Image (cartoon, rainbow, N blue to C red):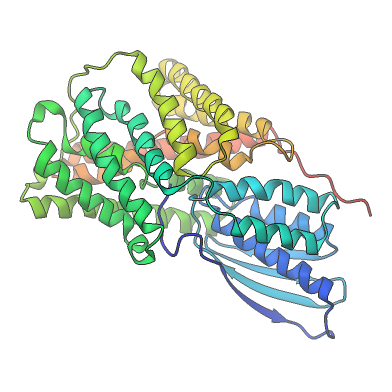
Length: 435
């Protein structure tokens, strides 16, 4: 999810080296520049996985008359471009992956399709890329803030189906949303945003909201407001990359996701120390439900609308995202009754991947990354890790290790399911330009 680590939306860093072979032409320079910029933007928006970057960049390079080789890790790509004039350029691109501006991914898909089909040359492609990078976010800051609150409220009934949980989430999510919006303008805050958000939520929860055990455990009150920062999608993407053979990228992403989880856990513990709360009070026992069952169904609509606003997804994609969310939830619920939670998660992930691949076919359709994203969230991987770490820190060893074991099983089930679903329905390849 949105975990700013550097200046949000800042330009990627590029280093270029050129092998001898004579002076280049302006057209070849435009080709190399476009491919480097395309790689940087794809890398910067690759929070859900980097397996498609090499294929898209290499296809665009071939359409522009260049042979491209790409060496990829999570936050760096080494691009070797053999240009038509005989020169070879090596470009090192660095960008911190995130998922904060998915409108750019939506705009890149038709651009790459036009380049691969020969409808856009290097000059036009660079000009369109300029417009994509310069375009403002599709929603103002206050709508992004509202989106984060709706995102959290949609998730809250899964933690505890109580009115108190909803009220506490509304308050706590407003605080985290204000911090996330402020971090968009203050890069220094963005560097430590997950830690600051978790400390803030922990202090407010333990000082004001967790005064009655009958209202549920403090961890369950905190989690919905922190779900925007919980790296469940990173964990699943890392496992999927490992399963697909992208070992270096997957391993680095996995370490980074664990680091973010630990950072959130440390923030919760700091809140306990600040308020003088014993760590043994960090339990996750749920309160008795007092919400109607229909609210569970409606909560996914709230959740999806919040996802669209929080992650800058074009609003025209709301209906297909909503359909995929309810499909994922329905399949997971039905399959879990038949084969258990891990098996149900595996089946739901496979169906989600296959359906998203089908719906993404065609340059005017939503990118597969955007279609899969809300389904990642519905499978709630990261919250298990957060619960496991905080429960362990609170001294509840058995419950903590149970949550962490469940996390490992569910992450693996999601990853294998996504790989299987994607393999069952191959993606539509953009048409190549005529020779």
